[in-house]
Image (cartoon, rainbow, N blue to C red; front, side, top):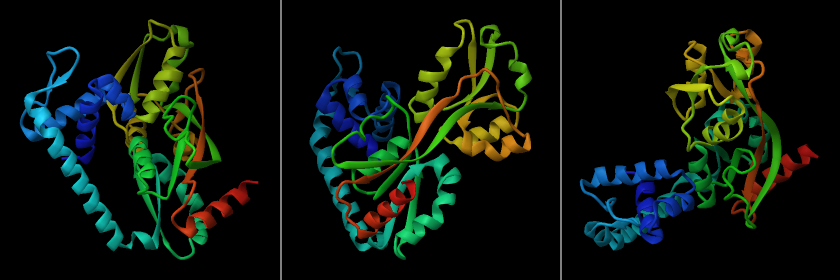
Length: 296
């Protein structure tokens, strides 16, 4: 059971539409539908009448709305009680994407640790959707993530402050780029080690990279995961090509283990640090001041 499934179900009950509910939850409709099916599978029964148009809940689904609200409220209360009695108040929580936890956070550690005044720095590495969700629900003090226009707009709000702390490129890499020689117009088949379409990098690749190829070019998805390190490992095995953050593959490019694919598109990204307008901890304000001073 995943608490997100309950949240998804209640949003669906409120919106009455998979499309609107998926938009509210900032995921694609196929991903949202899979999560509802996961909840139904766990419960052992159907909550949605998919033969009806527009979508409506089954009788069981309607009966479960109130109990689900109650269950979710009690789970939130339980989490709040545990957090209050844990050592979270003696630490600063930063949520970030997996790739940044590997390629960016280590070089920042001395600056971050000095700024938090002896408190532990806790890093929650996850997919971007979960990182944003954790940050906006105040379970994280800071959020460090990639930014590209038009992807995940929910951080554009008055109670959130941001600062650009770096830049990055999503670059096309493989073991043997010679097989892609001849230009974009000449390619017929490309073996792609890719990200799910609902993931940040997946959205970015489908929006900025794939449309640049000829219509007859076929991308064969040979391996898919949201974990950048796993994708890098598969590309190193020669399984196919992938678009990966340049910092993550810098050592492999320098060693010649991976090579940049000429003529394939790259995507510019920014690395953004977010905090709440009114931080709960003084250490967050001190850390923010130290980081922004270094940027000036």
